[in-house]
Length: 176
Image 1 (cartoon, rainbow, N blue to C red):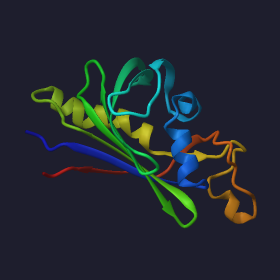
Image 2: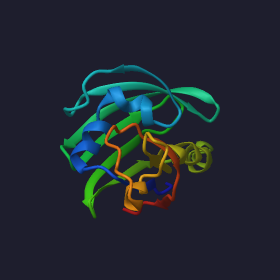
Image 3: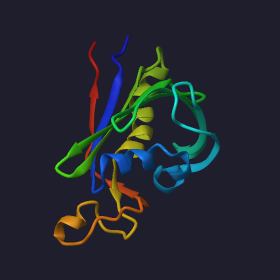
C-alpha cells in the first residue's frame, strides 16, 4: 500500500488570529477567497462537529462537487474536516490558526490515501496536482497589495477581502 500524501502550506496574513478565523470559517466569505470555487450548493453554519457543506469546484478542467463534514473545531486555533468527491480518494483537511509576530500564521494541511491498483498513480500525480493550487496560494489584501504591505508603512486591511497568488508549498509523504 502506498503511503498517505500530505500537502502543507503556511501563509502569513496581516490580521489577528481572531479576525482571520472568523473570516475564513464563515461560509458567506468562501467565494471571496476559495480558489476555483464555482458555487456553494449548501452550507449552513460551520461551527459544530457534524456540520456539512457542499461546494462545486473546478478541478482538472471539470466541475466537481466537494462534500465536506466538520470533524473538530477549536475556536481561533484549529478546524478539521473531511471531504469526499466522486471519483477521488477521501481527504482530511486541517486549518491551523496561530499568532506569529503580530500576524496570523495560517497553515493548511490536506492528507489523502491513494487508492489501490491503477488509480494509485492517478491519485499520486493528478490528484495532488489538483489539490496543490487550492493550498499554495498567497493571500492578498482587498487593495491588491501583498499581505506584507503594512510593514512598509501602509495599514493592514481588515475588510478581509483576500484573494490568492502563488507562494511556496511543501509536499511530503506521511509516514505512520
